[in-house]
Length: 70
Image (tube, rainbow, N blue to C red; front, side, top):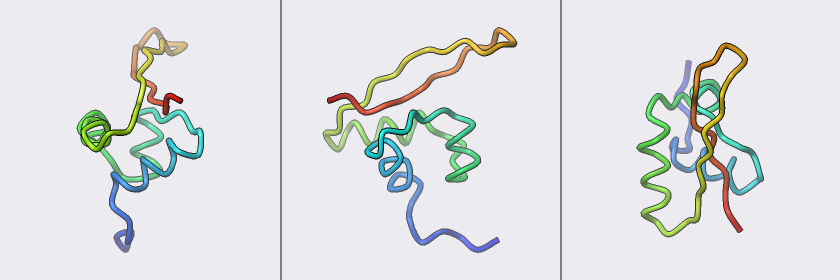
């Protein structure tokens, strides 16, 4: 499978700026990103406002869901 020309950080930032709530599963499937929290940390360090919400799945597992804040 060929590597995307965009970086994982750029792809995730594009999703967030388009109003998509990014979860670890979405980041893995869409961007090939295993380390979403590290990418979000880098995006925040660049000055973007990103909020995190804990979500509980139907199986009881908890995961983070990231979105841009206005």
